[in-house]
Amino acid sequence: MKKYLLSFIVFSIISCTAIKGIDLSNINLGMTKTEVQAKTNAFQTKTIGAKQYKDGKMETFQVSEIYRNDNQINDYWFYFFNDKLVSYEPINSVHWQAQDWDYKIDKVYFDLKK
Image (cartoon, rainbow, N blue to C red; front, side, top):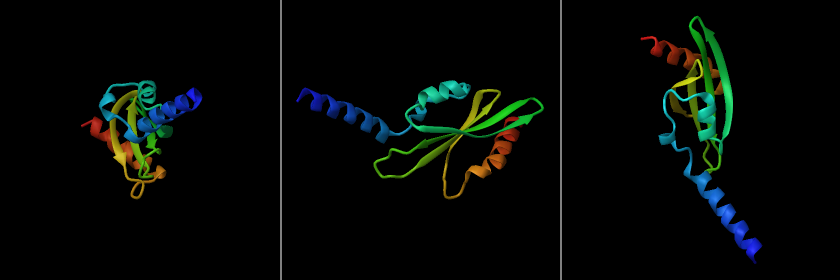
């Protein structure tokens, strides 16, 4: 009986964490990629692409919420310049695809330089 109760409690905690989604209040500009990964470790993550500019490297990193109670996938793209978070945004997978990172990364980079 204790075994089943413990299994139920563990499953409930894991399920609630997944349903809540990404807590963006824990994500701050200036964080490193490693710090962002640690804050989003319960979710699927991957590097979308990277570009080298004269003054540093820009990376696009995707975090996907895949364990939603409504079965909806919510993607966020995080932009790092020289391993520091400079911007992030939700991505609508219907309008943006993984190959669009090139356009988006240039936009974020040039916005930084304004």
